[in-house]
Image (tube, rainbow over the protein chains, first blue to last red):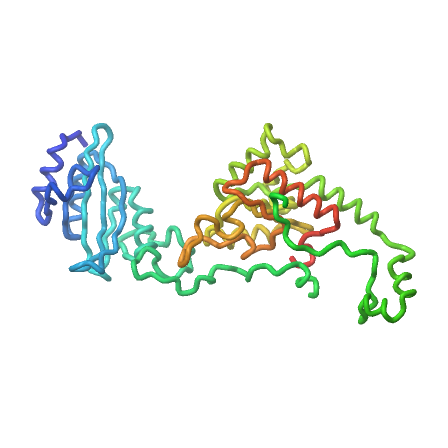
Length: 171
Length: 196
């Protein structure tokens, strides 16, 4: 788990098969390196980051199904202690297909992947405990999808608004 | 207009026991003498009730229970600068079984709703509820069409006696709310004892 220089990990990742480096102009502010890859390359990249002493910063999902070549985009950020060297990995999934867990490599990925499942409905394969994280257990739907509508907004209201006490007293 | 809104509630019944099946005003039209007899009963236990209500009002024990940022203000109310103990309401109970009043301090997420309902049901009657802050009044800043995260107001799940607006309310405002609740109790409001 020796420290590597900024370029070393970036070069290692860029030299992997199935990785496409983004153009310089594409690189989001705050991310030193941006890659695109297929799902199959996710775990090798995560393993490499782990071995290089990097930690997982964040996982999220973007609903890009309405874009050209629509996809669900998983975004992984890796960083390290000390001088910032942030690596952002985009994994584009076909709508309806599953992701794969990295929570065995990074314990912190556990709840991020549950959140992605809860909010976007992307099933993460091999996850040990893939339950909803934020919404109630019996909730229907995935709120951060662009086409989300709450089927039954009153579902979790346990009673109608309480009537004035006068009305209650008749009972 | 007071800063605190008190939920519409039954006025304390005047000492006027209604004859079953007849209306007092109807009686007055029929026989005014009879009505006079009714408003002055020979025996009534109002003073005992008053005594009990006085005790209830001056020893309101809130449930130790915070939902979101309003709870920070609630803690300030309990601490020395504002000091809820001055009015006997500073004894935050860690068990719902021992609590008289539930101060709903903060946003009620949909996942938390059933938990709050359970806690409320566990509290023995007589019991009262104070909705503290915009979120517990109608959802506050988190209310918008199609929102999926919160319950829009505490009165969607439990009955509320006093509403304290603010985001968050100042500690003085919560104080005012508790004093309003004391007024209600002293005036004979036994909370939601019957409806629970």
